[in-house]
Length: 167
Image (tube, rainbow, N blue to C red; front, top):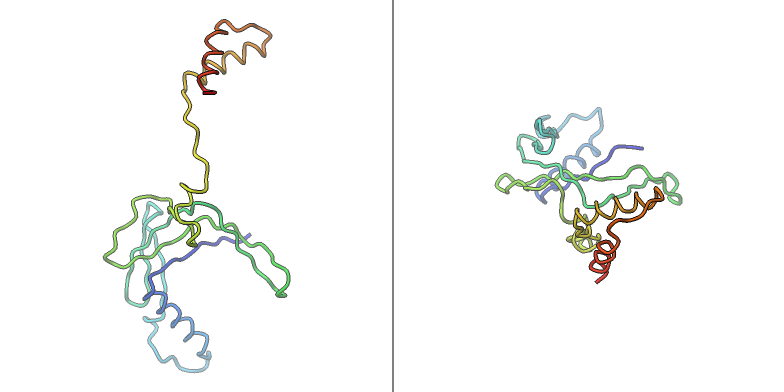
């Protein structure tokens, strides 16, 4: 499997990347380059924390952040336009921002890649149940006693606790 990620850039940067890729596809290797090599450079580097960095296109630097997606995105490849082959599970996105925009304060991106996945964690995934740790440890001890062929000392407490959680 390949290693892949999503690169999300502002519209102005997307136009420059598209222009750069189109120029590289149209130019032959024998033809002289119409623009300087400095305008053709793309670079992505991260700091020591591995979550923040910078994206360089030409001579301009843009801040970038590595964010975790709320769920996995599968990517596929085709060679014959009829059968698809899974190439990777994508779990992270590199978000490039304009220079004045603030950095995200979380490491997980709240929204997915498409509008239906807006607030995906809150709307689509089940919350963890609120459990009383004392109750859980007491029930666990009682279950271990029953499994060891013993009896439960606090049977009335156990049944009242179970009634409280059922209500």
